[in-house]
Length: 172
Image 1 (cartoon, rainbow, N blue to C red):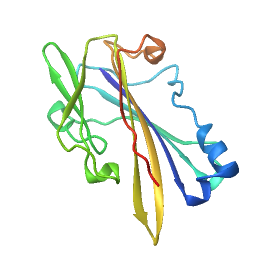
Image 2: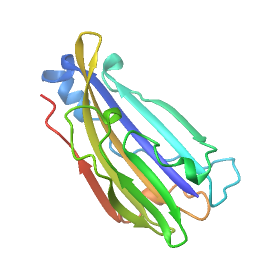
Image 3: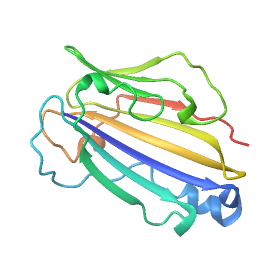
Image 4: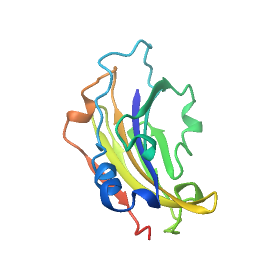
């Protein structure tokens, strides 16, 4: 079973400085998983928790969803912009590469293997991007946690971290 937690923070230039940047920087990069999940996990279960913070409420309360994506492993190659997961007999390969979905500026387009995760391990990926949105710039920071478990474990992301990968660009 794979648990993927994605925390997205999105803002415009209104939150690039002053009180907006203080509130935006207060968004947590880790969020507790629900203490239980009602599904029946298999090796191919991809449980996805999405949290979204925006400047509409000064980054206070996220919108939240959690669900089994119901995708077979051969469809895990483009989960979020540049994130790809590949299930092998010896573990879960976590890969990242820049795509246009990640946002500007352009970065290295070649795939990069972040880590090969075993059961009970997890990794973190951080990236950001700038987007042209309705005649202004929109900015987005994304933090993704990926954990491999044999059964649902709401504490997986409190275990020691195996790898951190960052693609944080200057978004001026």
